[in-house]
Image (tube, rainbow, N blue to C red):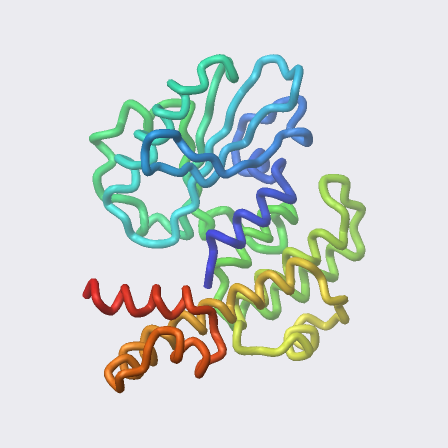
Length: 267
């Protein structure tokens, strides 16, 4: 399940969601802009930066890191990237906060001492999605995030209940169709082997061919194609076929075949 892509879409459409997770709520929370930014002259990329709107006072930048796998170097990397960004963009902010989101406490790096100056400050907040509370008692935005960590069995039921809730409640933060679109996207990633019709039946509603749905399915196809090429290309190369012949035989781009061949050579 490509949670990075899911969270990018959630935060891009619903940037004020980050403020539902933390105690700090700026007056212009609805107008924040979510971006993925690259720190120039380095190999670093910060996946989640919430930039204040024009004219905001004070100008507070929020950083978000979503971590769904164990990575003992996470805090070393994240705080390095954060400080580099702040150093290079000193004229763009007056203050900053950051939020690190884990599905559970068990995935947090074991070393929380080295970076205690950050972790123990009021500028850094760690969120554990499985400790936020009961699913049906939380804000809809939080429920969206919890869907990403639900088991397949629980996710189907929770998604249906959330869709019913969205359709019944008055919601100001995001149009109802946008929220349902996000729920559908999460379901598509979670149940990548199901057809659109099967996903619709599972969720209990009929959907149009939305942009988000098409992007999710396309990404799933690309991942499956890449895995297939990793296995197939080396075997065909051994038969004496050229990269161009393999691309024609498999009906894929020549560049994709070259990449698969290079990965095999590098092993």
